[in-house]
Image (cartoon, rainbow, N blue to C red; front, top):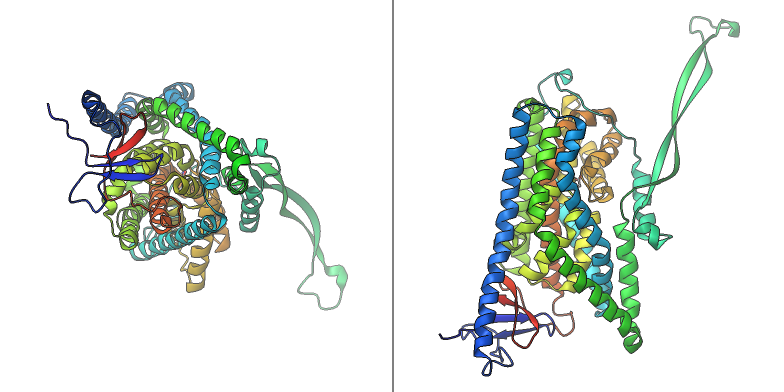
Length: 537
Ligand code: ASP
C-alpha cells in the first residue's frame, strides 16, 4: 500500500512548517527525517493520526450530546416530581467533580505556560502583545455594551406593564464601583503568592445602622424654638472592610508570571533550568488534562441536569422576563456569531467560522460549567492544538481574558440595567445611558470568571443610575441559564482575541515567522522521528 504523507505539518517544537503540497505557498521541506527508511512506520503513524483525529471529533460529539442529555435528564426528573436539596446535590456530584478537576489544572497551567512562553520573548515584543491584547479587550467590550444598549432601547423588554407582576427571587448584595476597581488593581499585585492561589482581595461593605434623635423644626412656628418636634431616624452606612473572593486570584498570578518570565528570559543560560522546569510542568499538565477531558461529557451532563432540576420555575420565561431573556440571547448571538467573527476576518483575512469550529469543545465546556476560568484549560488546548495559536500568545491572552474580558457579561449588564429601568418606568437620559455603558464595562471587568459573577457586579450599574439595587432579584430566575450563553460568548471573545493578537504579533515572535493558521483543521500526530507534530487534515 502506498503511503501518502499529510500535506502540511507544523512542528511546534521547532516552530517550522513543513509542506510537500505543490499548491502550498510554503517551501517544500523534508517531511519526515526517516521517511525512506521507515515506510511501515508511516503507515502506523497515519493510522495513529486518523485515530487521533477520530478521537478529537468523538470528544466534541460527546460534549455536544452531553448538553442534550443533561437537558433531557433534568426535564425528565422535573416532570416526575420534586427532589430534595440533598438529592439535587447528589445529582450534581459528577458535575462538581468535573469543575474540581478543571480548576485543579488552572494554576499549574497558567503559571508554568505563561512563564515558559514569556521567557522566550523580549520585553518589547511582550509589551506590544500586551498593548494589542488590551486594545482588543477594550474595543470588543465597548462594542458589546453598545450593542446591548441598542437592543434594549429598540426591543424595550421591560416596557408596558406593572412591576409587581414579575416575581422576585433572592437578595441583592451591596457593591461600590470605586472599591471594585481598586480591588482589581490590588489583585494585580498579590501580597502573598500562596494565598493568591486560592483567594483574592475583596472589599466588603459592613452595614452599620445608627439611630439618631433628630430635631424637626415646626414649620408653623416662626419664633419659638421650643415648638420643635423630635423624631427617631435610622441611618444605614456601609463601612469598607477587608474580605476575600474565595476564588484563585488569576490576575495576580498572571502579572507575577509575566514579570518572572521576562526576568528568566534575560538571565540567559542561568535561567534555563527554571525554564525547562516550567515547560515540563506545562507538558505534564496538558497530558493530565487529556485524561480528564474524557470525563467532561459525564460531568457536563450532570451539571446541566442538576441545574434544571434545582430551578425555581420555568413559567416566567413566558412573561416580560422572557422577553428580556430573548433580548440578551439575541444580542449575545449577534456579538459572538457576527461582530467578533467579522472583526477577526477584517484583521486576519481568514475564515472566522473555521476558527470557531476549532473552539467548539471550549464552547460546550463553557456552556456546561458557566465558568470561563474553569474552561481555561480546554480553551488553551483548542487554540493551540486545533487553531495553531502560538502558546506564548494563548497562555497570555486567555488567562487575562478569562479575568477581565467579558463581552457577554458586559452586554448582559447593559440590557439588564435598561430592562430594570423600563420596568420602573424610568426614562433614561443620554447621560444615564453613557453612565450605563461605562459602568457595565467596569462591572464586566470586575466580574470573576465564575458562575453568575455578572449578577453580583450588576448592582454597580444599577446604583450608578439610581435604580433600586434590590431589583436584580427580578432577573435572578433566568440568570443561571443566561449565564451559560454569556460564558460561551466570553470564551469566544477571548479565543478570537488570541487569534487576532497572534496574527498581529507573529512577525515579532522570534523564530516563528511562519503562518500556521491557514484555516486548517489541525490535529496532533506522532511523527517517526519521535517528535510530536500537528498536521493539517
Ligand atoms: N459566568 C461568567 C464567566 O465565567 C461570568 C458572568 O457573566 O457571570 O465568564
